[in-house]
Image (cartoon, rainbow, N blue to C red; front, side, top):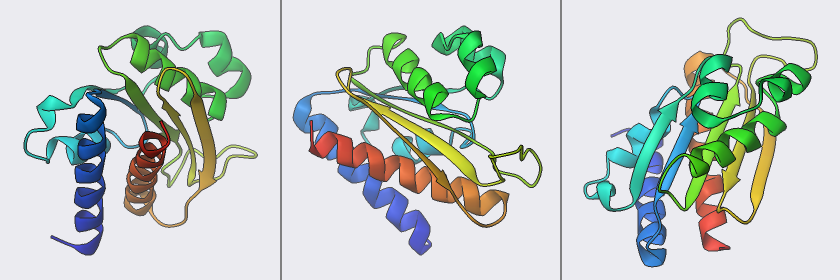
Length: 165
């Protein structure tokens, strides 16, 4: 296992422990990460005890259809925005049996950049049903590097949310 894989595995284990302590379930709404967060979670034996479901909503239509993200919100702010990341996390929570949710949406590259949103732009959403936390970062590197950094940061943010809930 590489160092980055070990880091992701350790984060997923810590998240599982925190969720089990609270008797909570997790759901994910992934776009840029294409399911890699759910894979990290389900790589942990026994994760069915604390992982409800993961949705890969890559298209704008799937964000609207499966997560109830308003099309007007996407039109106003763009799919890669903190507003849409918040709506994705909230929608995932509302459409699952989970107690906490995380979401990712971004531009992995090498194409897709738009004015004000370069390749590597990623927006995150985390919610425990009471609070929604969002963040926007710009990562460097190729498509794979951006997606790996996004996965790690999403898990780190979730762990922070769990530790303060």
